[in-house]
Image (cartoon, rainbow over all chains, first blue to last red; front, side, top):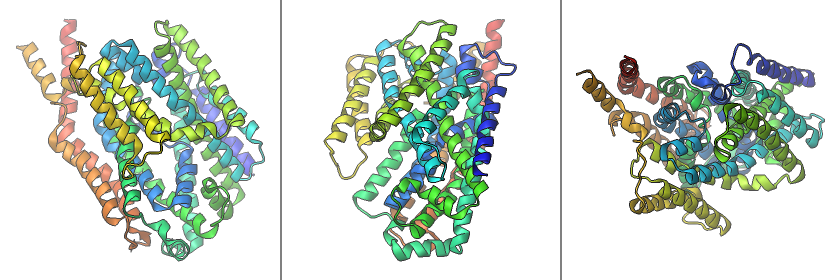
Length: 480
Length: 83
């Protein structure tokens, strides 16, 4: 029964992907990559939520709480939550730059704004370093989810099939397919998590008794210790809330206007109301099955204990779609970065073809790595997040800071990435402060210093300069 | 920087950051339960809703007029260029 429900969900997602083709000129590269910049608020909301909550939601958060308690749970929830106010203020400007320059990726924006090929390349490579491990995380998550839910598929088959499905999603219509599928995925994920959470709380005899039971056996998992654990939690919340802006840019370009993008961010925190249920389920697993081999299976262990067969199928479907959708979107981003930023000057048709080929190669490579070297990329995921966040300085340059120059940003970005490597591999611990935050500070300082010498000669004003009051003054001037 | 309205930043950015980060600092070590939930979790859950409220307040009180007004003026400018 579980298999039937699961299969139906996957088939439904494929139908949604193929329906996305109808009536669209999907051969146009702007249509293919950013949906013609025409998504309404509702569709933008679903795509954003679809891109943000990967399979890591069901694997990483419950697993982290199970293994490390509240300090993990709180920074995870805190950084996602605070990413939304940051996005509310920055995302409309990113959209503005995208519209003004015709950008479809962040390196695109850098190229157009600064006219600098080296900045474009360094930024594109930084994104690559993030996209590879992030994809492998999805594959690994799929293996964990399906295995723990009792599906009898070998990890190799699961990975291969997942790669084929992710490819099928986007090959025909580009980003419109993930946008359509995200509606199904977002609803399923929310429902599945609420069901598990409610079942957990009910089985425990209420939320109070659930946490009461945890307090009996593992009281330290409910609080955050002071000192370095607290410093780490706080600096990580701030760093990742900022970093989130750099990894969730793809959907911003698909919105139809600045106002649409800004308004979408207002409601995005509300999707997080699924998290209390996820937290209940994680602590339920902690109190009822305290000796799991793999903490990452905590949520699924709770689900298997609590839910009937057909609901397990629903949970598996939600988990699978979360992983597959992110894979599809990531491979599209990677394809776009390669076809537009690494090999520039291609025609629209060649860009689309190269994007499609890259998507296939990327899925094959990351799937193969998952099967052959399962832990290699997962070791890199933390560091990859540190890397990609370093592009924030360039983003600030495009959006606000006229003084930042291309040479400054290139050296800053390289310095930031080197700082990440040095701090990470020397295992330097500076009062528990998040390593990426220190590297970001280095990056900022180097950018400022070098920009003071090699001044910015770009003729483009930062996006915020076209803001409210000035644009009105311009209008007044031009009408008088 | 004309893009930012200081009052909008205060309501939409500063208040959520101070509340969430400050709440974690003050409540993280507490073993007190609210509605059966450890208080630090309860506080963060509460801010899922309150952050949306803050952003909505920023939009409706401060940003809406500027953004929608600006959109209109851009259309006007484009229209003029065509003429």
